[in-house]
Amino acid sequence: MLKETFTVMRDLPRVREIIAILMRHGLGNLVQRLGLAKGVERAGDILHWPGDHEVQLLEPAVRVRRALEELGPTFIKLGQVLATRVDMFPPEWIAEFEKLQSDVPPLAFDLLEPQLRIALGRDPHEVFQALDPNPIGSASIAQVHRAQLQDGREVVLKIRRPNITAKIEADLRILRHIAGLATFEFPDLRRYQPVRMVDEFAKSIHRELNLSIEARNLERFITNFAGHDEIIIPQVWWEWTSERLIVQDYIGGVAGNDIAAIDAAKLDRKVLAARGADAVLKMVLIDGYFHADPHPGNVKYLAGERIAFLDFGMVGRLPHPRRDHIVDLLAALAQRDEHGILNVLLEWTGDTVVDEQRLAADIADFMFNYENLSLKDVQFGHLLNDVALIMREHEITLPSDLTLLFKALITLEGLGRQLDPEFQMVPHLTPFVREVILARYNPNTLFKRTKDNFFEAFNVLSGLPRDIGKLIKQARRGNLRVDLDLKRLDHFGAQMAKSANRLTMGIVTGALIIGSSIAMTIKVGPTLFGMPLLGFLGFVVALFNAVWLMLAIWISGKSER
Image 1 (cartoon, one colour):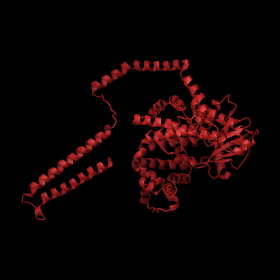
Image 2 (cartoon, one colour):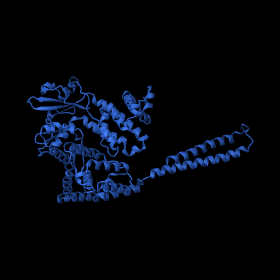
Image 3 (cartoon, one colour):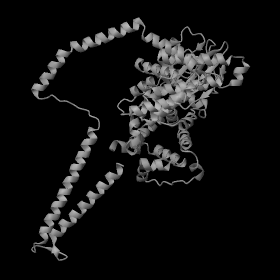
């Protein structure tokens, strides 16, 4: 508690700013519910609760999105992450979060130059023969400028904004505090583990702050696409790259969101859509390492229908077991296999208890809606959104490593349809899914899996005598302990303790009434209002006990309805 109070006091100016922005956007009830206002009031601040009726008429999702925009880089990034949580939010909320852009007003180059000088360790003009002070991109964490190396090669510099780290760290401390309050105040959010979500978000944003990590991401994708001449990944100049700065090749071409320029360059949009889809599906299903934000702003098109991917600050990784889940789900969706979809969703439930029969029935209803549609008429993004809706209704939390994937696939289909209105994702998925499934049952793969399982079983068996010996020694010393994690046991124990307390209180109250009645018949000792004092006090205490007991029973019964 002392630590939380210190955190709030240290970041009090920012807390006040956050509260003011939330209230200005009609989110005062949230501030009150979380108890944020009390902390500020205790610090001597007077809060004015605005009554802007125009703001109140807006949908809650719009108000939250506007508040996140005004709150700055950390909260914009948070909103972009929440846009991936299709298992938590309905489509209208996801649509609002997707509107959050990291574009911010650019800093004057004079303010950015000291940061560049620190990153290079020398005067920038000693490294670059030309350096454009006008940015070609300005995001919340970094700013991008064009430059020329001494040999004339064109590069771009992605320079981290000065003092951005301290601001983000302060916001993260406040977010952790808010997540703890939300866990306590909103029981429905507990299954999403808000504190853990903030911790994962903090790791993600720390990776984005360290620009050398993005540079290593670029190198990984260059390796994965070696031999694929139709896909361009910028080359990193490691001599000048650090956690504050990335120097990489400049990529020209046409911006992915400029359809008119694509047509003017006489590029084949159908080919671009197909190649873009194949590239991202290769990242996901073959490499297990993918660009998590393939929206048009992060893509450029070059002559020969080549595609350049930019901005690798946000990437996703899929380990083999999770990749198998995704392949099974995609195969089941493409084949309309209800049982296959059910098996994958049950794998994702974790410790959540679900009604399998009701889940199976909902999946059957979901697949019935697509029964008469041919593959060319199926929109894959709608399929994934429908799966996410089923997960929300059954309180199944999407594993964190899949949230970026769902978002990337939905964004990819939108990009493909923007280029080619007749673009279909499913035909592109099918060969990749088939390739992964065939590789899974390849004789070499089966042999390796069998060998790994054999050695794992051998290690377990070889360690068995030692483990049994240790167990026997602990039993002899009386140190043997068995931990049982039985579902609902904690709840049952709490209910038993509550019932025992109430029973004890009832017995004590009954004893007080009987004892006080006896005391009333004894005419010795002090009196009050003509009655023996001890008997009178006993009845008063018994009355309070009885009232407390009845209120506790009534409140408990009401909360369990």
